Length: 427
Image (cartoon, rainbow, N blue to C red; front, side, top):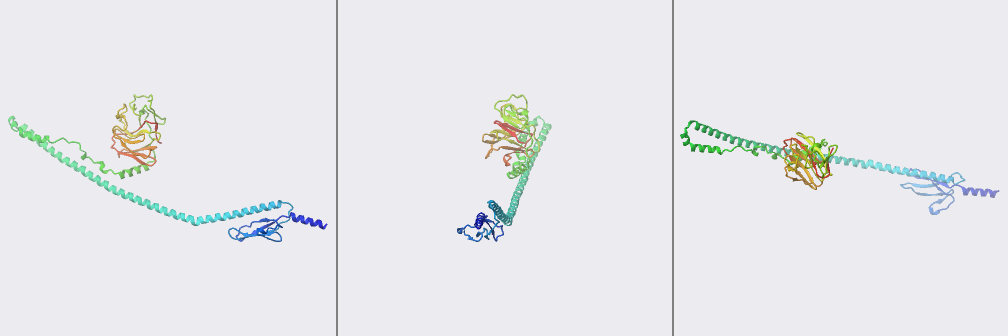
């Protein structure tokens, strides 16, 4: 009987669950629990065998000492206790890891708030002050340059006015004197005719000849540019660029323009929205007898003309390597292959032209090359009718491609020509 009880106790000791070691540490984190099988000797692991199992001590990361003490659970008769204990230990360890990560995250945030954000704030303050100073300096520089240019141009205008007025005064004095001479000569001749008989006229012939010879030396007045105000004296590249840049920056969008179907060349087809012109080598079957239609050159006009104010429109040209766009008078001839109907080769049209890689401004048959680093995908046209300014520019960068001054004397129509693929008025 006693032997049987001894065997039972031995079996109970063999089936007893291993002890759980509960660590403690001075760092304030929750303790980790490690199950340790009792009754097993493992001196190489650094433990000391106690009465109930192994006690182990090790260093805890971040400071503090980890000490394991045996914790004896109640007796279990199956391996389910071991699985439950291991699961509980795993959950506790995960929570401890989470606490450590939260502490590191909190430390990083605290450092960011205490060090990084103040440094960023100071950097923003310094950059803003520098930007303000730069704006003020540049505007002061521009303002000073504008003041100097204004003073120079006003002095030029005053000097040119005085010169023209002096020329007019000189002309007035000259012609007044001529009038007096002619009036005196006429009076003399009338007197001679009235008071002298034929014999006396014969005797006075030499005198009459000499006095009339003086009159023949007085020429009739001729038109002189010296009597006009020379606008070139008050032209300023600086003022022109500033004005153009200001206008282009203030322009909100493109003016609504449509192409007049009645003017479209038979080499061109017009889209339904009246915005796109497409070139075709073959002539379409159109009414060529219409007086408004171009019958030879691939041209077309807009539906409306401008006779005052400021006007802007844009044309998409990225698909074409051969086109012209600009303005013309309504009197531009429409028929025949002569230069009178060819855009840019007469006095009634001003156009920006591209042929392959060659860009030019054309007027009166005098091409002026335009040097461009790249072919623009879109070209803007600006007309200041009263100011006599015609600008071609790149809408993407507001870069002025070419500018021309002209005293326009008749309403201007937007005009277009295309000899390769298509161009379109931008919305």
